[in-house]
Amino acid sequence: MAEKPHMNLAVIGHIDHGKSTLVGRLMYDTGAVPAHIIEKFKKEAAEIGKASFAFAWVMDTLKEERDRGITIDIAHKRFDTDKFYFTVVDCPGHRDFVKNMITGASQADAAILTVAASDSVMAQTKEHIFLSKTLGINQLIIAINKMDMVKYDEKRYNEVVADVSKILQMVGFKPKEIPFIPVSAIEGDNIKEASANTPWYKGPSILGALNLLKEPVIPTGLPLRIPIQDAYTISGIGTVPVGRVETGVMKAGAAVMFEPGHHAGEVKSIEMHHEVVAEAKPGDNIGFNVRGINKGDVRRGDVCGDAKHPPTVADEFTAQIVVLQHPSAITAGYTPVFHCHTSQTACTILSLDKKLDPRTGETKEENPTFIKAGDAAIVTIKPTKPFVIENIKEIPQLGRFAIRDMGQTIAAGMCIGVKTK
Ligand code: GTP
Ligand code: MG
Image (cartoon, rainbow, N blue to C red; front, side, top):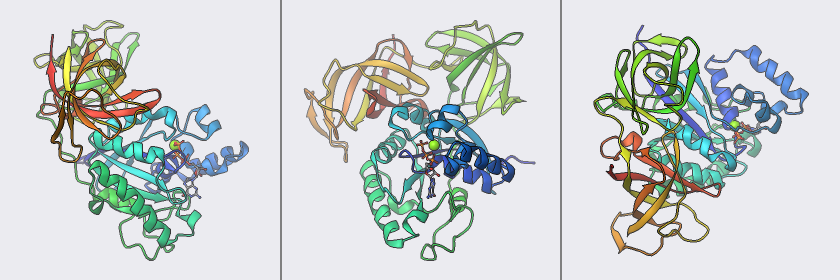
């Protein structure tokens, strides 16, 4: 049987807007979670006074998550529609866990943004929209959730659509091409089928909109790149790095190189969803066993590539960035943390080269002394320790990053030139 095309889907949005509940509901409505499990969660959640979180518990499996009623870490689950099989990543909305959201979103081909109809656009609604755009997510579905709390009111729906559209437009999405679906994740309205509670809504359900997503172009022709999420040492087996194939194809037997450590190895076997596979393609989350690699040679943030075309280690790089927020102004010498693929590396902004018009990309000022929220700029960056980044023109999947400091996303950007040692 031919496997359906695979899509990585992130669910994003402000805290408590119902992301985990929506994912739990999708898993339930597609048969990925049986009814008796939801019943069991309902009972257990009720015992700690959190009955409404039964669907969220499908995703929120950590004790701390269940006690606090929030998502902390990202979790991957699989569900199927007629057309695709999805790996869904439920992202945390809490502002303290934006770095986990970035990891989740950086793996996604498409995203569902949940916006509670009762709240409309909030801080992390904006931040997540901005980040998903800069992290390269081009396909969005907006779930206007908790419609039951606003009595399925069409007027309220239209207000929220207008609020969200404004933000989408600001960062370069086209609201006209994006479905805005009024839903109740708890009650199940417009998740699988059109709901009788919203006779005024004529668009697709969530599952309908998921089926309408465009199949991502699979970058099998690019050099192999697998950002490492973790590396395990398993006795009797050896080193097993884990990560998502971003570009290229990995076959058992391949000669690979891990950068920036410059450790060479040979792939012995590849596993996906606990099954051995002969090769892995972009989008596949895999664990692979490597010969020639010692414990400690490979860690989170490293990148595995083809031995013949190893990942690029930047001594310095040039980037185009957009400043989302900063309490004062950014000047040369600033050293925040860059989140790029799975790596988190402190990097110094060596120089501010050009200030750009964020809408047109035209140069507004050469060598500005500072940049602030809302500005776009070309800057030169020096990592404080070696790290892998690729030119956006060559390997876009490894050319994007977010800049974070003081618990906030300060800016996001893309690499437009790399200087190696
Ligand atoms: P974080 O992961 O912490 O950002 O939250 P979340 O977006 O995953 O929200 P979650 O699914 O945990 O839901 C938060 C609360 O909103 C829970 O009490 C849910 O029962 C409630 N909720 C979610 N969806 C709906 C809905 O459609 N209607 C109503 N009335 N409540 C909802
Ligand atoms: Mg959640």
